Length: 467
Ligand code: BG6
Image 1 (tube, protein in one colour):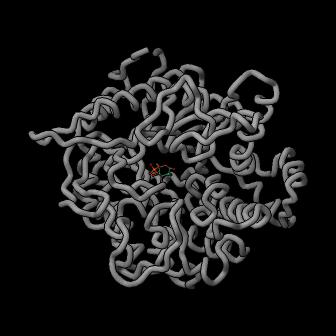
Image 2 (cartoon, helix red, strand yellow):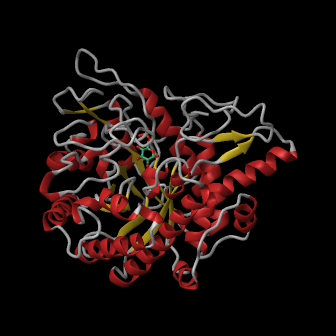
Image 3 (spheres, helix red, strand yellow):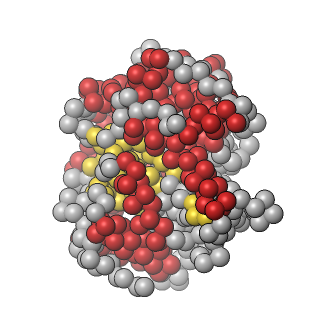
């Protein structure tokens, strides 16, 4: 491992409002799409009655406990914390003319607390949630008017926090709409492909509008996109498998292509035609899309395989996307295949394709932890996972890839997105809460807490090449 992390590398962690804050109706917050899916992003959409009924309603109570949590992140030496703004704290129904001051004031307090320790915020405008009001009244991103509501929201928060936040992201895992349409674009799960791609188009236009607004309002800031980096390999070297792999990788790279290059890639024309997909794109939309992002950000948890043979095509157990299991890789307790080398490969793929700086804004291991009788939590499995991935980041840096930073997913235990579980833990900091919502919410440092502190303090030189 020869690669050296740059001097100002942004080490830190990443969380999302709906998975940590709780306080889902506090200070005027409106209901979000996430509030309507108490069982997670693949769960049923349930109308909410008054009162707490979902684990996310309290989550880890970050809304009230953030000073203590930020202090713990500072103790690890964080340079950066990625979180999101809950759109519904600012515009509770989504279509109001004026923002909710109490919601804006909360994020002022949060960013001020981070500034005390020199922790830079990296802020996602929309992380797996949008105002439910926009879904009910307009049909979510299916309606062009949602672009304007989003732009109003984006401009509001850029104006308000322009002196406090310099790094922004538009939509979390924007390609996830293909797999979870309600979460991604506020459409019913059974929506047809034309409806989904039309909504995605509106979201891509909104993303470009946010980029433009950020460049105008926060001129010294930087704004990126956010992709679910599910890189796929051919299961065999059969040319048919290779071609199918290229096609399936384009399913998600398409989003990056539009956001980084400013236009629809040629291959989408054939894809739309052969799948009977109609998308209305205006000339003005095409002009708007030319406003491109400054950097690429992505999540990376696993890789997967592709085969063109329908008989071999089976779904990998627990993988969030339909991937064929790779026979050479081990899996996490949730069936997500562990592939540190895939991260180096992905970094190179994205850098070759876009020549823009890259930011790894999610990576981590969801695992069950055991609290020992003496209160310690010896999460060596998590340390090994993160260590091995970071060694590959160093290799990619040595390959010449420009990497801005690394924010591990869930530096503090939080509610998982896919199934709304507490028992799937990612944190360096343990939170006393179980899947049924029992527990004191007390925070406790795990063994990985001290390990990550050393990694950051040594700027990566404490990492071990275990190959
Ligand atoms: C990403 C999301 O898909 O993966 C996060 O951006 C999510 O919100 C993370 O939490 C891990 O997934 P899960 O289902 O284990 O929480």
